[in-house]
Length: 189
Length: 189
DNA sequence: ACGGTAGTGGACGCCGGCGTCCGGTTGGCT
DNA sequence: AGCCAACCGGACGCCGGCGTCCACTACCGT
Image (cartoon, rainbow over all chains, first blue to last red; front, side, top):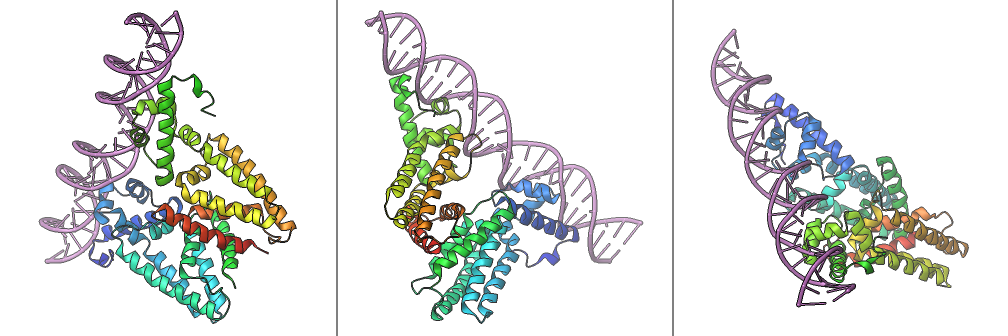
């Protein structure tokens, strides 16, 4: 990961790095990934050169910015796996993932539109998908989910959810909730 | 509409106009709307000036290019209304609209991302939505669709469907079909 | 066939984002 | 305190898309 050694940066450099990441996260969440690097630098109160020195590629910036979102995903999935009720575990994962994606436009884009070299994300995605497959399997064995449902159907739902657009984040979350409920009804046995 | 008077163009001009529209439709369908005007002109075998003279704004080009897609929408909806079976009529409309959007990336974008001045589309959209609302109402009265479903849920489904992304159009259509089936199960009483 | 006009497209200048270089500044160690 | 290296950001040149102008071409009426 890009920020394994931030402690050997000088204090002001590390400080700027954090401000850049904060600004990036904020603007990515509301406006998506198609934001000029300059704009992020401006919001962080930093010159373009600093931004480019810290993150030579937009891809590196994106992966660094969304590391904690990735962690949130894991937490959601693990929480679902820990739930003794297979249906509730599965459903909550779908609902929460949908909401997470609705809240953060950029995360969706980063997760979906595969950067050619963002190997980190591919691996993480794989790991998360495996867990979700397990959730599906359990819910099916307990008779809560239709037997013909496959992992791809869940992926389909998440991808479709990312297509929901609304002016405000709040409206997006609302739409996302309604959508998740609808989709879950479609999966239920 | 912009092409109400194409007959008073000179023959070569009208010819070029058609080639521009053909090229635009083709490239919009596969690559979406974010295509340089130059690229469309190039594919049409036309200079940039000609393109700009015929369609001063990209918006005008888009609305002109998608007029027949709009008609296809109407045909789909009317066909659904004509079906004596309320559920089949409703379901077929959802399925076909999803497929139409999956086939043509640009149409989705044109329909969704409201151009500020594309009043034509807004009106057409309104008219189509009214018909769809009628379809929902009929299917509900016949007991096929859950009573708490509203028009917005259908819009939600169409919007979500437009989020489905796949490398090839064929794969998109396939995903779209699976998704439509899933969504319809979620609406069914 | 020919003249006039509508039509064409290559060429131009503009703008905004991109990635990089360098003179000035600041943190950290002694 | 003072020095040096790390760091900063304004400024630069490049590129690609945009919209427009003008000299040339081709259609159409007589």
